[in-house]
Length: 301
Ligand SMILES: C[S@@+](CC[C@H](N)C(=O)[O-])C[C@H]1O[C@@H](n2cnc3c(N)ncnc32)[C@H](O)[C@@H]1O
Image 1: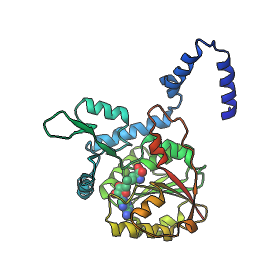
Image 2: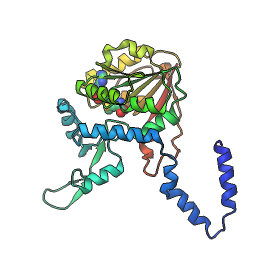
Image 3: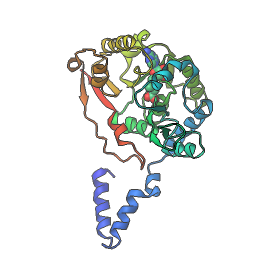
């Protein structure tokens, strides 16, 4: 049944419900966990298992000691900000950790008092909902295609691509050796090595990865991890090497926002064309619609 057929069938069914019961039925459809369970399948369960494994290997803040500089960068942000990895911690898990006193959504504005204000949360990974949106609603059929995740970190994009798409190859490039080791552990445990490969390297040393990719994912990859000059160099490298006509680029935030912040003047209009995304899809009760609209898709001209 396609969307139109399903809508018509539902309207016919709802037309038969008594007017007294109709508001209750619609409310049930909007909030019922039974309806939400229809969206959950084995693929989601597998990704949640991987997230469980990764949580057991990492501290709550999901950052490596080798990322001291990144932690300092986050601490120096204007508004008090906490790194909470969205692949590892969904809203329910955060609530449980807050109840156990292992995490807080607030900070104390005057020490010793009960006056608190909400912390800003920052994630270095896509959440499982965002990944489902990416592979089911943003990208086309990926059969015979190669996906490259620049800065693959925990490997979330690679595992989701393996599970949710038919991409023939999923390559990750990650500058941090410890995260590469962690990704290898998961790839081996779940037997993903037939389609996933991780390269421990700076993207600027991997021209050929960009040349052969059909889809390149750049999720806030450089901002907290490199100084301004290095970020400019990396963006120029991507611009010069991602030239395969028709290949796709997924970015968070938009290219315009990233490049304007760094005052880089690239000929965007001659390089890519943005493809409008429809974020009005129901992916679960707690879906962060704002996070979905941070995802941008471009086609290389
Ligand atoms: C925000 S995380 C992205 C995580 C992942 N792509 C996702 O969407 O879930 C950015 C990652 O990029 C890595 N990184 C930063 N600069 C890099 C570079 N020049 N080459 C390769 N990896 C880089 C960082 O170490 C970090 O793990």
